[in-house]
Length: 269
Image (cartoon, rainbow, N blue to C red; front, side, top):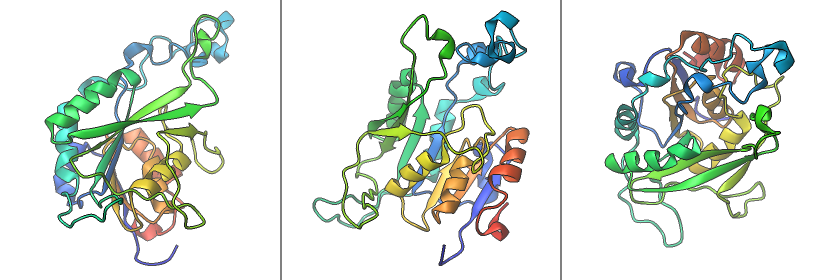
């Protein structure tokens, strides 16, 4: 990776305290908001039972949530932050048939949350949006497999103000390609990318999205950084990235495991 050194910074803090760090405005904000599963987070997961077998009885995770901070997440405050740190709309005219360099947000959320995310975005000036769908070849709802059709999809919403955001659909051969609204969700190689967070998104999937909506040297912000996978993806793509993670244990693991051997280590933290 050549050229100007990038910045990859992960803060063990709430995104609402971003002002103290003097971070720049973002071309892309990429976030995975709480799904608010509450005390049923493991309800469809084998971890609910000891050694994953219901014959062994319930494990210590039965009736537990992934996070004790979900109820503290305020969607209005989240969008206040995001719209404050998104770059302004570009003023230059756009060539007909091409996207502008306008910024965008991508918010991962539960299917049931999509309309809420869209409406909240509109309240904050993000008047336009479209959905993304991610298709898995596995399901976390294994305990329901003998009772119902199980879920094997994830969802996100792309939000923007007015102009269609920066869009890079050039393939490896330099040709324009069509980007569909669905993507394959392939699990990361655990030897390459450690599993740190219960709702961790695959690094390679994030790289795909980041390449579509940004250029090298652009700024990406992840307000709910979790495992640091967005920062890892940006480092590998030569994008600057700033992340916030309020939970100390996840932030520590992200720095020690996900971000410990990426290029330009001297620019970290």
